[in-house]
Length: 75
Image (tube, rainbow, N blue to C red; front, side, top):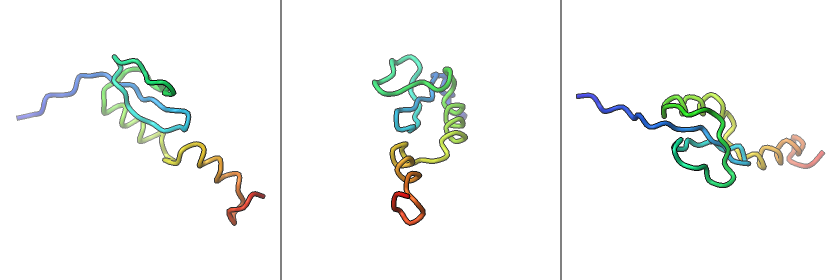
């Protein structure tokens, strides 16, 4: 017996730290989150995140890391 498919639509959303999530399309977005895709099925959203969220570090950590030299100190 097959499982019923999830017909709910979702959005891929990101916050100001470039962290990704999925959110039900029918709900208002929480403060600080922004839609990145049109409404789609859950798997399409998860696939999008898998392709686009390649660096899991928050934006602030990435920026701090890139502003430091190879020895961990500011250039």
